[in-house]
Amino acid sequence: MSNASNANAGAGGKPKTAVTPTRADNYQEWYQQVIAAADLAENSPVRGCMVIKPWGYALWENIQHVLDGMFKATGHSNAYFPLFIPVSFLEKEAAHVEGFAKECAVVTHHRLELKDGKLVPAGELEEPLIVRPTSETIIGASFAKWVKSYRDLPLLINQWANVVRWEMRTRLFLRTAEFLWQEGHTAHATAPEAVDETMKMLGVYADFAENYMAMPVIPGEKTAGERFPGAVQTFSIEAMMQDHKALQAGTSHFLGQNFAKASDIKFLDDKNVLGHAWTTSWGVSTRLVGGLIMTHADDDGMICPPRLAPKHVVIMPIARKPEDRVKVLESANALAAELRAQLYDGTGVRVELDDRDIQGKRWHWVKKGVPLRIEIGLRDIEAGTVSLERRDQDTSAKTAIPRAELVATVGAILTAMQANLLARARAYQTENTRVIDTKEEFYAYFAEPAKKNANDPTPIHGGFALAHFNGDPALETKIKEDLKVTVRCVPLAPGEPGTCPFTGQPSAKRVVWAKSY
Image (tube, rainbow, N blue to C red; front, top):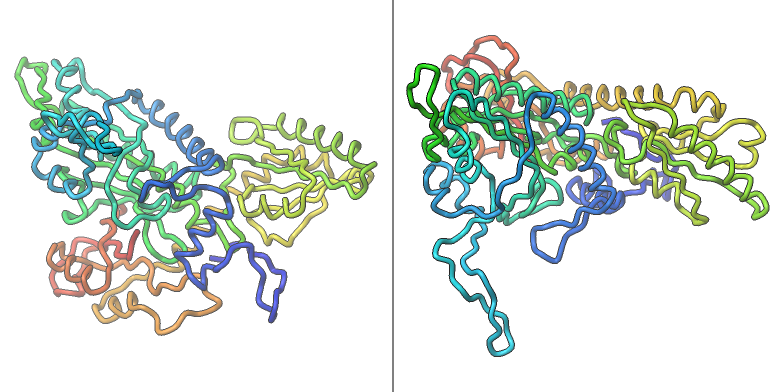
């Protein structure tokens, strides 16, 4: 992706970057270093968990704020349910417990006692408790009490919470033992109503990803092998990261009556007939912050889409002489007030005034990905201008712009940046998506390259492959074993029938194949 990078040449003529290694040198380590450079998060003393630092949490708060409004606009209400789930609740839905059993953290005792100078578990519980990996079963118990009649439906509930899944191989934001998320849970009188809800919320996720994260996605249905445990159908939005891998950025599940039967969610319909409700669940997590990084960041650090950026503008006063400082700070504070009074995306422009007298503060904000950086000094004040830098452009590019013009157009500039980031990411996805009709080309497309191209910041070969598939789970497993490639989704968009290149059998439409996180 042609993201902005520092064009200043270093030793040997190689471009200097704020983050090392670069994407081309070591993509996985680059990702970790962007997180460190932007001060987003760090590993915690508890293995597999993370501390989300203020800048990273501000991104999550903005994600949460926007999505919460979208959920409420579609009729959902927030509630909260217990962190602990009796093991017997999970046992009620066999497919569900089998799918999560290996990831469950289990509480077996309710206190500690001091013995020989050491704290040891004591007070064994009558029934072990599972630390919430997902909440279908515990929320189902409440739904069973709340739902008695068709007049109680639909029941549309969302929960913002943390969950624990005991992951062995973790990576900040993308896969951690504990993470933050939202999980929507709904109950309906009929299957069509539940299906409509499932698709509506998938659409909300796609809208959010593209119009707020500036991250293009492909909505589609998961194959049986990738389906949520216990669900009838699972749908997802799939995004392409800069190493060509897919990120599952959100899921929406039609659960049928499976969980309703397990939790005994029954109601009398309008004909006074008792039956089980039809339920759904859907969720996104702090994984979205990882998606932001891998969609937009470059070798100089984070790039925040303006609609989610913790700060839209940082103003950096430049006073060459101590006697100039008071005048420069006065002008900078006045500019900050003027910018905060402007509207962008329905709210005031978020401005940071960094008046620290330190070296390197410009790069501090480059690495954090603030959309607009403004420098103002005595000469700027005299000329009625400011020095403007955009994070979606080369970090060495500065523009002198009249101060009044900046104030009048700051919202338009941020809007243009948001659109530019989406267009750039969409072009990248298109450039790295290929229609494939033969097994030989498919295997070659996903084969590891013999060597990396130093000019290509995407060392992993392949991208998204649009190829026909006969739907055979055994074939999907074989391709996963051979290439670490899976069917990411069967796109919702219409497609033409054809022939599966692996079996020669008929295929209803092309599916999206890719390596994934």
